[in-house]
Image (cartoon, rainbow, N blue to C red; front, side, top):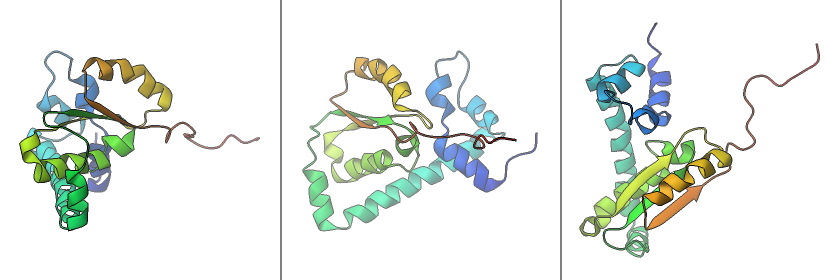
Length: 163
């Protein structure tokens, strides 16, 4: 199989995270995840790191605004809290609002050790999120932030028409 063009590969790696659904399979790890995209482990790691760096940079830019930084200080998450983001690709994205929140808290409130869990899965509908909700609750997070509904009215493929 021919490797995808770089822009398509970037898109897939940004939004598709096989480790969320395949991690429990015996013997599967970073090397196998990379192979799904026809990449070496190093290439896969580097592409993911680029997204991480951009999310962190966005957080740094936001924190440069003193008023915004003060608002991060006032977020209700207490020291040691676990915050789960449940959603679709808008949450799952390696540069999502949740990933930026992760870095806002890491940079501004590192002493609080707030743990962010990204439970977003690209393409999920509200019904699919509801089916995963119990597993999220069983982890006993202090906070669950949910963004749902974006994919509920989606259409795939061509619109049906008469011939």
